[in-house]
Length: 434
RNA sequence: GCCCGGGUGGUGUAGUGGCCCAUCAUACAACCCUGUCACGGUUGUGACGCGGGUUCAAAUCCCGCCUCGGGCGCCA
Image (cartoon, rainbow, N blue to C red; front, side, top):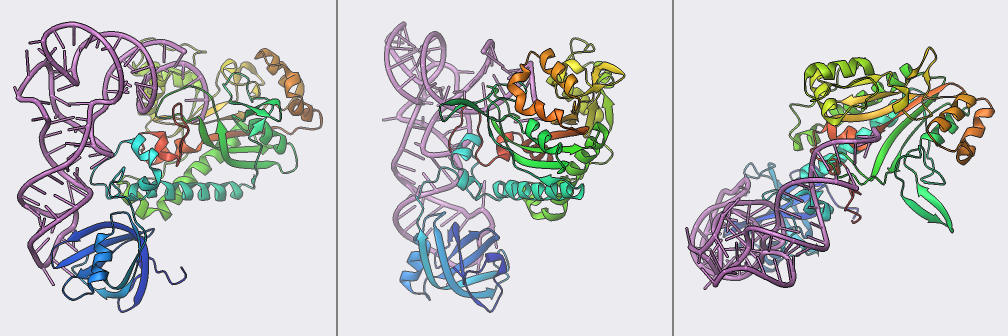
């Protein structure tokens, strides 16, 4: 449709063809208005029954809501029209008529619950707010990619079908690979390290991860988007610097380029780019502060993982993004390096948003002997990871990295109540379709 | 994996044993209306997740099943 004009571009004193969905028809009797909606907005089509061809009027006004129509006519300036212009049609063509009963209402007059919306995602994305989330998601990824390139990272793509998991403990989705046992990858962790060990040095990936945990919460998905970074000759401090720059770049990109979308989500006033630097609390400081809030019935002791309630109390206390560093080595995975001067402490870190964990990362163990010891300490068989460990015999630089939960970044940025809102077609405990 | 709480027209809801052949909004159908912008008005259409039980009487109480949401654990 070469001659199609976006509704937003229809200027007075031109004859245009606009095409889109019938948002609403308001029939006032002698005059009726059809509101046509497309990617860029809406435009009013005027039907004056006495003065216009009966067949034209009938075609336009009989089209059920959400039908796809193409309208050709003169654009006129009209102060009484919602956008200041309206189209007087010469011809109206119904390209695809919609059923009269819709499973949800794209005008937003009647709310729909999330499962209903997800079952009918296309209709849901015709709502301004629905569309806005994914326009912002796109911008967030664009800005993140740019921030990665600014630190000399190369975008890579690693396999999602793998022979072994990353950490052993997590539930993986098993699949059959030409008669052999295989799994959907739960993280690009090991692969990005293998590339960081080459002279590509610094890499990032934005891609899917799969986790077979049967959790049922507003912040977990079984298929999520991981934004990963790994850099050779980086320590955990530099990795945190990169992490901070990517998160801030994502917010800045959205702030600069998504004004309309933020408006559609009622965030125009509230949206702000987080202040830097993000505070870096040690694990020990974190548990002390949590204990001091009195939010937990039982005081945390060194070595405990942070319970959800504690994370929230600390988030309220800090009031913005913050890192937790120097975790006990025992509760971080084998590939995270421990401090040289204290083996009970790891270089692992988490980036927290007041509502939830966003990132985990750390400096990696690049010394093969220590790595193998780590495998054994966690009850994993190093033989199963031969493809990974053998590379550490051929010169592995010190390196560090992290992974952001992409949907969590988006949901915290946009104050979404449920992570499923941040995915077009979420995969969760119940949902496999669409 | 453990533990809670829901399922009422297409959609969103009211309804806690009889006042319910079920409320309201929106939608849909028909009619009226020449400036709507959540258009308005009149009339109408359309539902108690499935199966069993208790009771004179069940949307409402009990049991099983299906299904959805949430909390925790764990994580991104």
